[in-house]
Amino acid sequence: MNTRKENLSVAARIVRPIAFGGGAGILVCLVLLLAAATVMASCQVPQAAVTPVAVAILAVAAFLGGFTAARIARERGLLYGAGCGLLLFLVTAIAGLGTEQVVQGTLLFLKLAVASGCGAVGGIVGVNMKRR
Figure (spheres, rainbow, N blue to C red):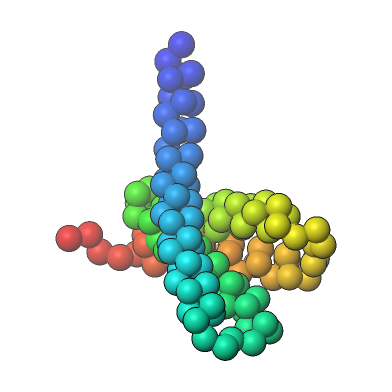
């Protein structure tokens, strides 16, 4: 009976940082995408610049989400950050599938690599920062 309670707390220790980090990453991504859309609508930005800007925003959001997840967990920043980046990738991929009928495989793998890599780096930085 006691082991079930311990297993639940282990699951909660894993899910909670990734969920909060993913939520922070999604909020950052939403704000940055809205700002980029405002700038692109008001200026003459070439259509070719939209995808690189979106990938850069995903990278920043994954980094900050991984950073947040690692600061909450206080351990295993690489894994928590990569998990957070993977969560952000899944959310953006599902949103992209809802708006586009064509899936670009190369771009999808690029976004996966960028999100998980930047999330992992953010997790490493988050764990190694000193607490005040």
